[in-house]
Length: 257
Image 1 (spheres, helix red, strand yellow):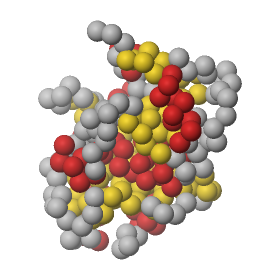
Image 2 (cartoon, one colour):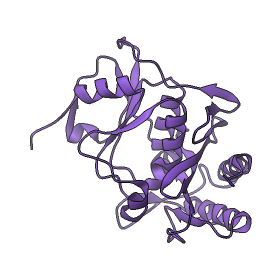
Image 3 (cartoon, helix red, strand yellow):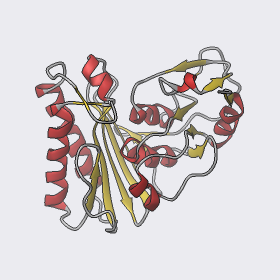
Image 4 (cartoon, helix red, strand yellow):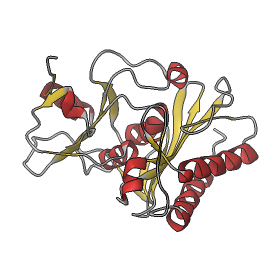
């Protein structure tokens, strides 16, 4: 595979440095048509990342949250989120990330997630190990949940679902961070809502490399080639150790309208 993961890590870390130095706690948000937040930082960092990718890999496609996709039919497609967790970023909270994923022929093959405030970089190549900085990581093994164990959930999950998890539930405010803490074994699992592909592309690779799975809460998931065009996951997904994911799915019930 022609992806230089060290270079992708360097890009993510450089983007994080730029965000901390020039934008964090210094920008005001706008509302997009879908009511989500965006800032000048989102656009500037996506533009910068696209410039790096196009200069190093001119034949690759690129898809990001803030600009139009380019070359979705190419063998390699980079899927980037310049700030995953823009709401947290705007609020001055620390849990936001730069997320860079790579899809090859419809399969996620590389992922880098950098949390700038914490200085933590999570990364993996498909078929290899997952890492937190230079430390190999694994998802938590299945075990009975204690009162201090936790899973991550979306902030609006309670509007449509009831969850009977015996431990704690936490809202981190960033899908990328959810994936990192599951891959690292700190969270037993995470429920991710109907996220968009740039939210999950990098984390998908990292979680699977750490021994985890991505399982739809309801229905089925399409292949990644389809997801690149439909953009949004059709159903919430649960990530974690295969046995833990099965248990979490049993604890969740959709509420009646």
